[in-house]
Length: 195
Image 1 (tube, helix red, strand yellow):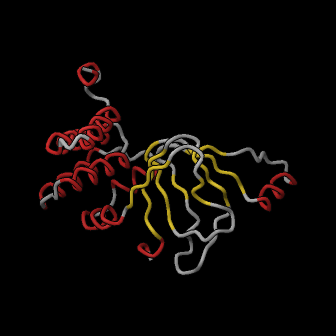
Image 2: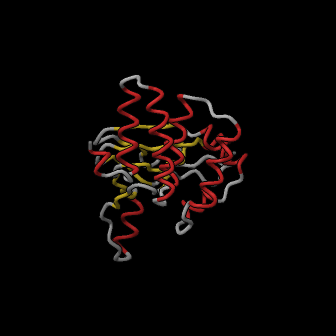
Image 3: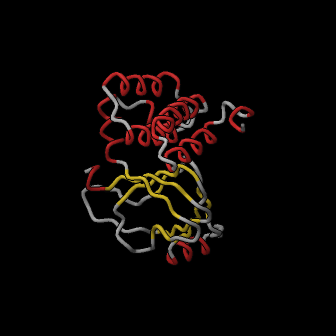
């Protein structure tokens, strides 16, 4: 009934698809994920479209034409106003498939620490939904305070990216604590895969 009232809400269709998958109504979930992905592209939410497609294709392996069709939609219709939208929309078809196959989906509840200052940085994270708080290392906070810069936590949300993984060919450490403020859904890709 809610979908009848809000037929073009991609987040609602995504939740509906998750519900159907949880109830083992797989054929219906596949259709709902497919529709959600199209609505996400129309709403300039390319990352969310990619995740919906990953979930759909986990249930039913796509053929080449389905993959090519999704790539074409991302390229042609996916808004290209932000760097993240461009990242997804400008990939070649083989690049898109390679990245999608290596993304790992992560769901976390409130209050979970994702990165810790001085711990090895092994992944880059893309925020699909939810809110996180980023706090600088004590050294960075001291430098910022001396320069008169505010050191309050920075809040991250959907379509933000984090992870101190560069340069790829050298060990790196996180210079931030990042904690979930709400339930979050992320996708991550490891530094090893990118290198």
